[in-house]
Length: 474
Ligand code: 4AD
Ligand code: MG
Image 1: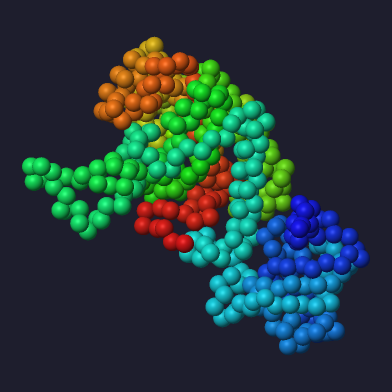
Image 2: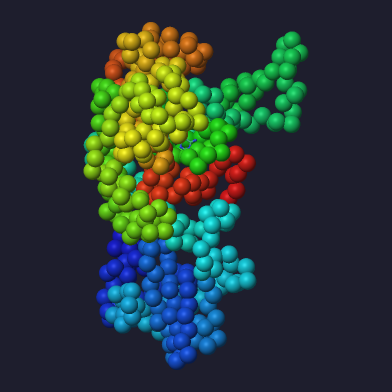
């Protein structure tokens, strides 16, 4: 059986970084380029996704199959190169592999293989999402996603938070916004036959799989609150689903969310941990994926490293919704959506605050109660709730959170305001009936974090396979 180190040694990143001249190795991967020299040798650039760099393979005419196979190896072919590492005399790499033999697993017809050596548009690559992880950009995005996910778990584990898995199928709408995908096993073609006692058309959900109307979750928060009020600080990190018909560069129908929930914590404690969370994850990814970030900085967004450095080093600005509305109205800027107290801030407003005015992340708090979900704690002014959103340059809202309403009566009032039936949230209400405590939490959109880290403009490129209106390919 292979040990952990053995697995690492199978990857080209390991050979490129740590391989020693004289070592006998076998390198496996996909051909990125091949250059032939008239003097009877070729260079193959091999990549296996473990790093941005390729391993250079030197193959000369003494290698079996040189004329017939090696000199015809197309871009995209999968091969194993067996040989010895040597110090590379050429520029650009420390070592190269001098091949003794080449084994071809699979070729790739150059007439049809879409990833030839030229730049492709991100729109085109979205159509071939099964091959795009083989490109520099999408390999780097995948590595950043991986490093960010690991950093997120480390952040919480280091602080004693428990990782909990909340359900994906649910019968309660956490955000109360009605943007849910229904889950059913009812035969849609026969729905019209479902009639109530009066002979009217009415779906009888007692006949459905769960015996009542069920959907895909929009957030794991309500269930995370159960664990927070039993076991203490906890977090979820899982897929969430929203059937909003928004065709924007920041919305997905399926996205991943990180949701910590903390008892004995108020709004300020929530802001503190959210700020330190973003800073820690950014710092970690900057260290672990330095090469990938250099690539994004060069080819995707020339300001990405500068932005991340400034996020890491500056205290986030904290302003109330009321102050922000004041700043926006006095800005003299003409926005597409005019600003007044009580409006839902649009992306253009959020971006003005974080990009133009403060030029750093901004935590907006105390929003009008009419704008935010039922579970947020009401302030004594009767007008605002203890909500907080974190806005970052280029993206706008990356985190949404709040202190939760822990008072049973106030929570019931809020549910009535939103026309939410108490019966469906009976268990949520019981958390306030038995041993209620002040508590708070937030949700970070994982793909928006990846947008921030990579400088990619479209969120559809920040998840392996995007689900958006009219698209669920792959
Ligand atoms: O602000 P939201 O809706 O908050 C919640 O769902 C709370 N229950 C979280 C909590 O307090 N535990 O969503 C949280 C974050 C947003 O700030 C955004 O980053 C991301 O989730 N998000 C989306 N990301 C991609 N596509 C969408 N359609 C998104 N909707 C929200
Ligand atoms: Mg929000």
